[in-house]
Amino acid sequence: MHFLKALSVLFSALVVAGLAACGQSAQSVLEGRTSEFVQTLVQMDNIQSIQRSPKPGTIVHLKGKVGSRVPLLEGMVYELKDTTGTIWVLTKGQVPAQGDEVVIRGKLQYLKYQGIQSKEQGTAYIEQQEQIQHTPAIKS
Image 1 (cartoon, rainbow, N blue to C red):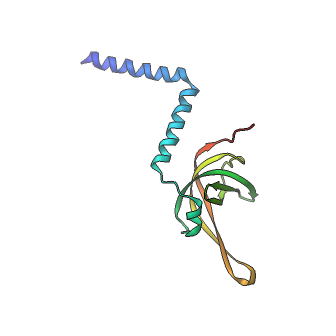
Image 2: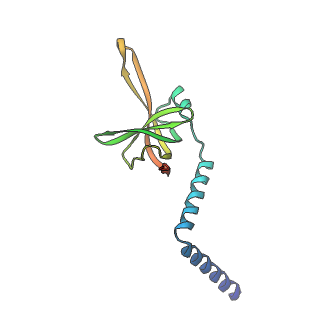
Image 3: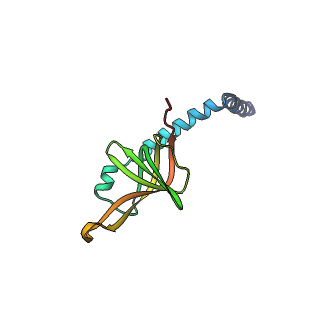
């Protein structure tokens, strides 16, 4: 029985040493697999459906490319584009560069305002809670 336990410990040590020797490449592979796994577990929303029937306070998960960015006094907003449309994302954290692709989790908010002829209007935006994945744009 001691032989099997010793063999198990030796095998574990070899696996850890092998991963450590691989360094960055093993870590990159694991991170890539983790983000793929997270995306398969989490239902991605699309921007068009969010804007059609916004439900403030709803937690959404979006994947898209970063467009324009605008600084604010406390944070920044950036435009997120997917194949169905665009939406503004408010963040107090690290802001991705224009052209980067991100997967985010955020809370849907709705800003109401008085439009022309005192007609009430509004726009949906996302208050980012977490940046799940970040893929920098390929520079040419």
